[in-house]
Image (tube, rainbow, N blue to C red; front, side, top):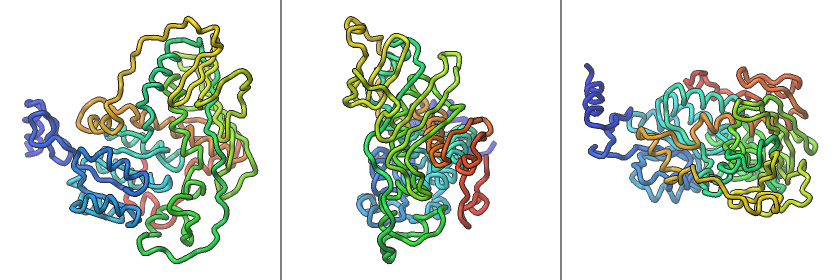
Length: 432
């Protein structure tokens, strides 16, 4: 018997867990902390560092030394890297788990490097840059039996729990239609006004990653990348997973079979200021078919007469009434129908903390609530809305084969090409 197998056998008898790094976990273990590597620690990535700081952070990776400077300085004795590949080459055996908090177009490659090497993964939404990438990550994590969590942090909110209980408890009857939206008009950032030299603190080629080569501009980096199709997924990708988490959870939605979209004239490079999508979800034995409307710019497809939408981002339309809700509010309509309504018993437990869920799952506990088998299909649906808009119309969707039919332009957006040096073969990655 190999030494590691002997260690695992002895640990099992003692009620301990052995991680791939050989670390023992359990109440009587020498250490019960994960070794975590954080990829992307500036901006939003700083929140992930804060969320896992109860563990042992062994490595940090960021392409922008200025934006990462605060965290680099705070963890001055931790290994620092610009290139996640060099980080794994140097420290793979020391790492148990990885967080990825980079721009959308650079989620996939470091995530797949981590999963392929058996590392647990926390990744920011919307999981990846295209549908195929989401499916690859979801499938590989399941195949490897790894603990995952997608950054849908509002999933822990008590109000959302109560909404899910209301819908599942039949408060408004059978739900056949949902309207979900994000307000505002962010998008179309305008053309770059100049191409200054790349700042000394930024590794521009690494920031571009798999995207086509182009000159540096502040119009892309550090933040407006979100509104360029090569890098971001617009406000739909930015907010879709947070807001659609409510109907996906409440109704048990997975993959749509039909996706349609409309909006302003399509720009080949920049995301729109508004758009509307319509998705058809089939019946699944627990409920009938559901039509889901997603809108950027307000609930354009919803008859809002008589509805109080203050603080709302979702409206469930049922056979017995309507449920209007947001992250922090919920109302049943018409009010007179529900004036004596008794809410169902609370069955969804409070979260111990979003990062804590994932950390516990990494140590052998229950799966985190936003594990990829739940959030992967949701992220795919969000990105399919973008596909329909960019393709100029709808299509029928076969989720099993990832095939769009009825719109020849759609299929090319389901999976995108990578520039030289970033193909799966170039990166030593394997398609699942």
